Every structure is written in structure tokens, then in C-alpha cells.
Length: 175
Image: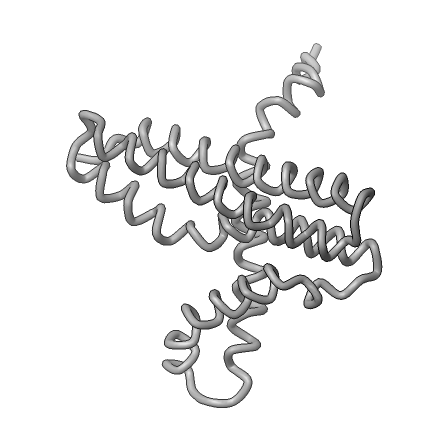
């Protein structure tokens, strides 16, 4: 039996970590760029942000594994953590990409971004090989960026939507 309430709680926490990783990395990079070059600030902030988001996910998984949840729930949380790890790690990286875009700078000059892209490409390369040769890895990288951004945006909206509804107020009563 799988506890849907526990899954919902962990997915809500995942959304909070994704949003927090994006926002904190963005604030850190913007603050660092006041004192140093944008790429240097990115290279200082991204490793810490990636480590923090990975640790947050790991702590959630460990907490579930040590809890009194059923084996099915524990396995589901573990599988979701594996599937959602790369989109979660994309959160701070996407903050750096967005900042570099608006600063009209090439993010590829960041050593940490380049290392992240190479690492993800090495993980995705076997997947790309299943689909054939050619520039498939570029397409898979682009698809990963889109998928990770969509997952992050949706998880953030799910987390923020109740607050947005409270701000907008109750539905008008029909008379």
C-alpha cells in the first residue's frame, strides 16, 4: 500500500526545494555579481546551491526510509527521487541561465555550468544512443532543459497556488 498523503507531502517539499534552489541561487549570483564578474559569481554560488538542493532531496528520502511508512511508499519515494533528481538540480542552474540571458552574457563561460552540462550529457548519452546517431545528444540536452524547467515550474505553481488563491480572495457569491 502506498501512502498518497506522504507522497503529496514529499512532492510539496520537493516543490519548495526547487523553488528555493532557484531563488536562492539567483539571489546569490546577483549579489555576487555586484562584487565580482557574473561568471565568477556563478562559479562560486552554483556548487553550493547544487550541494544544498541535492542534500535537501537526500534528507527527504532518508527521512522517508527511516519512517514507519510502508515498503511501497518508501520505494515510490526512492524512485521519484531518482527520476526528479536532475530536474531538481536544474533549478539553481536555470537561475544562472536566466540571469546570464538577461545580462546578455554566455553562460557557457561558467566552468560550473559547463561541468554540469558535461555531467548531464554523460548520463543522457546512453539514452541518446538508443534513438540513433547524429546530433541526438543536443536534442536530448534541449529536451532535458525544457522538461526540467516544466517540472520545476509546475511543482512551484502547485506549492504557490494555495497562497495565490488566498491573496485573490474568495470567489464572488452568485445572487
